[in-house]
Image (cartoon, rainbow, N blue to C red; front, side):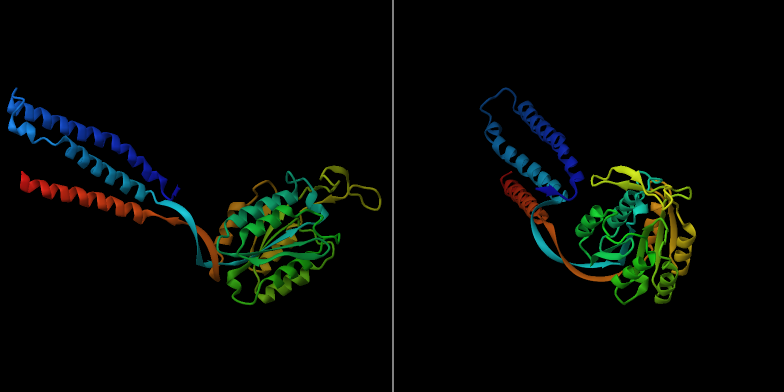
Length: 335
């Protein structure tokens, strides 16, 4: 058994002073009777005492109080399947998984920071449909729009810089794939959240930005990296750096954040740009911007929930109170 509002259970501590008050009242009544009848053990008033009746009344009152407290705490056990309407937005999480995202100018790496932020965003998207797209030299839809946040979480936790076999960085393909995942409808209820270092080796982003702007898509762009940049490590199967990526002349390849492209993307799509040059970046501002996206109906889904049992406790408490009131009425004519 679980409780929806366990804070109410603290009131059960009041049973101790209540029982003490009941005991004190019984003791004072006994002492008053003895003072009234004096030392005569066979007085008629002494034969009318009913200690068992008093104990029953005390048990009924304290039991009713305990049941009301337990009921107020919201007892739940068992589960039931219910159909619940969902309201939210359509959100596509677009993540750059090119080799440069392994750079470590944002510790522990750019991709790890992007994943951490994406998971934090996912936790705030209850009721929204969420999809996942990754891109490098090509773009791949890893998860269609779904209300199943657990499935989206598994996808996000599994992405690496090997998720796309085509090397390179084609931001344009990533943006176009994300736009295709979003269905036709009210664009005010849709948004693309992008995590990238801004590199666009294939030079296809400019035209894609114009296409998205004409289509009314909104992009919230997160720039992961620093202007100084860092070398791009070469990782083995266990994710350990064994070398650095080198150009044709043998020099180490250094990757730097391209903020100009991302700022242009955000401005042309009526979105916003958020620099993530350190762990945590501008995550609070990003979450606030997502909260401002319009919400609409997103169909219905079946959810499992615990069954509330408050009526049982309320009914039992009412029964005990009714029995006690009935006993009190029966005693009055006799008195």
